[in-house]
Length: 423
Image (cartoon, rainbow, N blue to C red; front, side, top):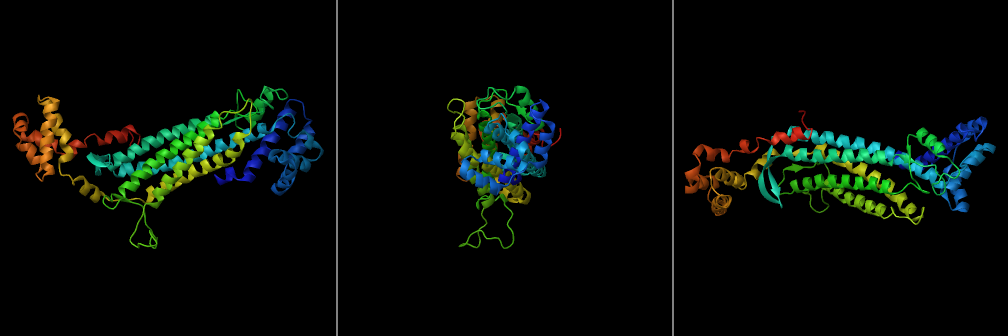
């Protein structure tokens, strides 16, 4: 990602676009073949020289073009012929965002591999499911991971779509009307650079494409934050169902030698906020005055490289976390049993409904026996001895209501449905 967004790399893309424009002119007969060969052979730039020229021009692209031309010599007059700055800048940007999309997709797929591994290894590792932070009903850790995998898969598809949407260029001139350069020439240039010509540009490519790209990165970041937040909660001392890898000699706190903090997961959560902020800034840049203004230019120098690098860093960091994640099935089992059999209360209610009781009455039967459990009585025994239950359910049917295996009998469905396990 650094190689895509370094200043040297950006100027290299500008050079590729400028050469492609000269090549298109030559193909259409506007530039002599020998001049094209000179441009190809002698085209080069020097960042220090560009900076020197920019002190005069106060325009980075024009400084670059002058440096390119002076290195080429007489044939340099054909460089940047008939085009405006953003024909070059936006076309190069399309290449850079396209390539960033490729990197992000690969990184996201690597994270998906780790999530899939966890889901398969712990497909039937029981743990308590929680809603509102409170014990709800049993699930498996593999089921939880499969849920992460499903969301990541959707984000990968969004990345692929955003990558295609942003892979466009323009050589349509100062206001996009093709006054000097023809649509045919624009198509030639874009095809040479692996892009599609934007069908309706102004002086710039409309920023809805770029806002969409950063929105997708923000949504990806939100998904990564959701996983990291769950990992942070599961690492709490009183839960401790998983733990980030902790190296020998690693320091958790300068004051408390015993601390093992989920700092890697916290890092992912913090950076997700930056992605959302950058996305919002880009949304503010969709609207421009007439065929363009300069409000988008300054912030894009920050939000594009930062967002791409942040998203890739977050994907890599979360992949590293999951590779080294320590899972404690025994703590999951202990936490699951913390409320005894109360977590099967819904099974009791549903069985009574099937046995002919109204839903309201069945709810009250399950609830009154649950209330006894809060006072210290065994929930399962209370249910089994309840007259309303004994009247409608056999002892064998009651026993099945409290079977963890019965409760988890469809757990594997989610792993199959999400592609974690092959059908």
